[in-house]
Length: 386
Image (cartoon, rainbow, N blue to C red; front, side):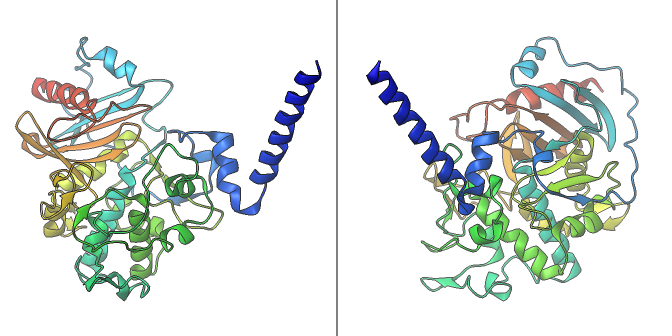
């Protein structure tokens, strides 16, 4: 009995110590991590958010076959297995197909996770079109002098966009102490983004790092003089006629957008980013993003070595992913829990999938999550039926 009491006392003491540790001011993000655990697709209410206003809403025109198509029966089990909540197909600029699960609707908000990185890239393109940024080879030090050169090589916006900055950011999702966890649950994005140190020459390795995208968002704000939410609203969201206001989660009240992630909107409005790529940066005859910039953004930078697989980078461009499927060249936006916007130029189509889970990374030469095969094959079946 005495032994049990001693064990209980030790456990209580450890809990008290842990509680005291978590209550320290610098451990805000750890308290949030313990309370909320892993990031979720509908978690935006736990954060402060800034509105990305949809100033000129216009619904998608419906295709002739809208309402007449359904997901093939053989594909439906995998849609359920991966916890799909929304699936949308746009063909020839019209809504061909949409379906929703788990009480989600065309208006339901869901977290973009890392698809937001592609939105930041588009904002860089807008800033180039506006003349706020000279081009992607402009030095980062023009905006933030503390980011200069490493071993004689100047850090540029290209290096941030291609994830080849050569900094010490650890992209770890399993540790509560990782910078990625601090970015998501913390309340000081600035200290993380500006605390990164260069440890190798930029422009050598493709090394996926969320902190780099966050720094890129600070560049956009410095260049434009606007909050990135407001700039995206003015330059993209409103001109593209998004139907609903989006919410971009912040690190704290009045703070900075979690720009590497956490752009919350619905599947139909996410599809507009894909349509913008199909339109070569235009909407309603107005050039929102330079065509040349977009062409480079969706093309992998093969001058880099993919640090994860020690081979030529064939997966990543300027904050956009790329793959080849059934002979089709497909640039796409991607989030950690299976958030996707696929652009299929040869079919003049966009496929959007949102959900709770994604598959394991396929160890084929392309190294993409294997659930992608489901969303693309189903989408192509629906497109071919139209």
